[in-house]
Length: 236
Ligand code: MN
Image (cartoon, rainbow, N blue to C red; front, side, top):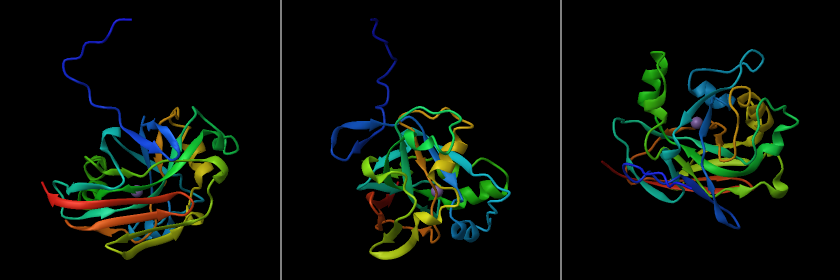
């Protein structure tokens, strides 16, 4: 076999640790669901009527991934850097146009994650009808803890999800409040993409999102899944 010769060393593949297993989970793509808890949709000024709406998505580059426990710089270009606590679904099998009934076979496991957001840039883009990339797809913006294999957890449909900043509770909700639940999301997203092992799906944040500043520490929790943390360092 011929070895490929690159101009420079390619970036390392992003990956995450898996609880109880030495091998790491290699990341393929990162999908994020927008407005998937009613109270958060309302606080963003865009309520959702499930009878007429469908879920929508944005993506983050796999290179934006940062492991739980990291300290990240306060990012460039924003003065309104927000946390969003989310349940992350890790995909472990291929699926295209899957039914809700078939969707659970795609789930490798779960993780606690943070969809870090430059809210000021996101809202300018949203209100001007432009892409959200500057607000969402920036360096070290996809924070994720270790992946917990699905095992006996099955399809999560309830369980507390919460977030604290410096020990003060900011977000608290329950997975039962998801507008589109996990099988519905997998069935819908797979109408548009061939889901593949290594894909991550951030399932949306509950209400209570807010800003952090340098020196803050975020800790988040999803029942039966685990914890995620992030410390905000000085601005670059
Ligand atoms: Mn989000």
